[in-house]
Length: 109
Picture 1 (tube, rainbow, N blue to C red):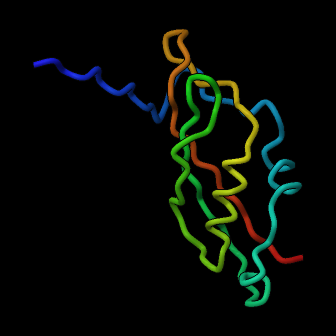
Picture 2 (picture 1 turned 135 degrees about the vertical axis):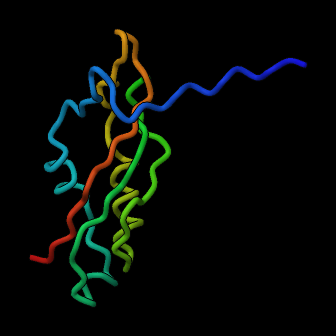
């Protein structure tokens, strides 16, 4: 029986956490499109999005951890998926996969 290699562990906490290398709030501000359904219904609030920063700094496994609805969840996921590459997290000097949670606030002006 040949065993498949174990999938690399995804850490929640590492010696050196991943860093965006750019302003996340500014990126979100520039790229977030308020969903029409949320705007029309006056929906405001926060969406928590969990994702993995991979060894190469790319973003994957994006999912909503705390929902708001009215299209906001999908928009939060879209924006996180469009993040430029990050500096990866490191454990024992090696780049590793790390879970990261980003809260995105939807506020009507």
